[in-house]
Length: 300
Image 1 (cartoon, rainbow, N blue to C red):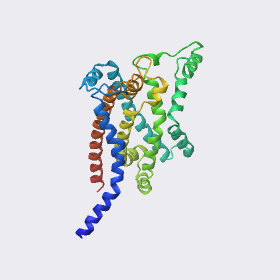
Image 2: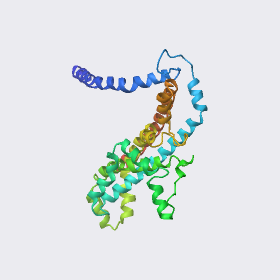
Image 3: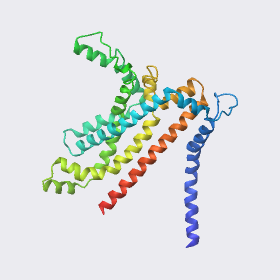
Image 4: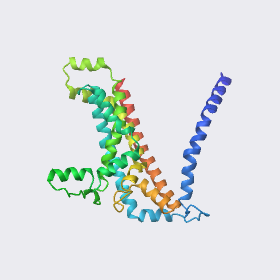
């Protein structure tokens, strides 16, 4: 038995070692390298000079960093209270056949998630331009052909077009996740609830939602991770402008690293992003584990 156990352990180690090596090369090594670079003034060429915590002091003193962090918070918030609940609502409507032609609506809802971020950014860049489609529609509605929408140039609302794009593009992903999980719900249980006189609200509140709590929490982890690292669409749409009003930390990092050749400073930003992501994901993971255990205990 002991020899068999050692053989099994060797087999497990043999199978997992390549994956761990790849993970280390792709994830761990770049993170450690970024951490080391964050304490230097490296500009992409030459020998890096150690400067201690200077990059972090400069970063935390920069108003663009704090505004980018604020915008990142809005992106996370919109993902958590916009994309996920809307994705669940649409999935529930389709699953319960509350609308006709559900197959058509499934395709329409999920289609934006299949598009290239570059295409989406170019499309909505035109839509939300000061003289773009939105301005033209409003101008015709109010009888002013010269109308120009300037609300998106304001400091406090410049991030709004990006938030709208994120909801439009990524709600379909959570829609598919919830729809797949809703299809696991026992039809017999739902039929019994209907026979007992339960209306649609009671079915949703008492039967569907409790089963979907783990899915909500897992989706929240996915949303937080994606929200903190995303910048591609914003980069093409506004490049953080006007001024820095629509900037996020990911774009702030890219700009400093590849536009200003501040590789050490960009690495410091990436370290903060990683730490922030890990912190939020650990909190959500702990909450998810707690609710999952509670749900499993209730099920038994």
